[in-house]
Length: 175
Image 1 (spheres, rainbow, N blue to C red):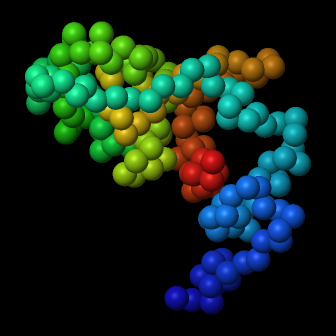
Image 2: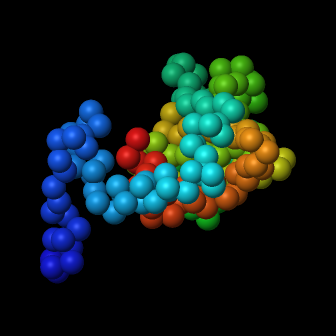
C-alpha cells in the first residue's frame, strides 16, 4: 500500500456532518467534495429522482414449470448481460412469451429504458435500444426516464455514461 492509498482511506467525519448513516464509504472526502461541487452549480444539474418517470425491479418466476430456454423466446437479462458497453447477449437465457406478457409484465424492457444492476457487479448500466424485446431478473432494476424536465431534454445515453463512470458509480452506490 502506498502513502496515497492511506491518505484516501483514512479520514475524519465530524458529527455534525453525519446524515443518519454510519458506514464509512458514505463519507469519503472525494465523494463529499464532488457532491459539494455539483451543488454549487445549482442551475446545471438535476437530481436523479427528478428525472425518473418509472422504476421497477425485475423478478424471476418461482413456479414449478421450467420457463427458461437457451435459444428461443424473449431474452431474460441477468447481471452478466448488462455491461458498461451495453447489452452482452452471447450468454442470454430466454423465457416464454406468456411469462413475459403475464407474470413479468412490470419488468418488460422498452426503448430507452435504463437497466441498472443491483447485485453481483453492482452499478452497471445499459440503455435498451429500439426494437429490443426483453425482460430482467430480480438482480436488476428497469428505469424509465422522463423525456424532459424544466425544458431540459433527458438523454438516457448521457445518464448511462455518467452512472458508469467512477464517480457516477460512487454516487449511485452512496444512496
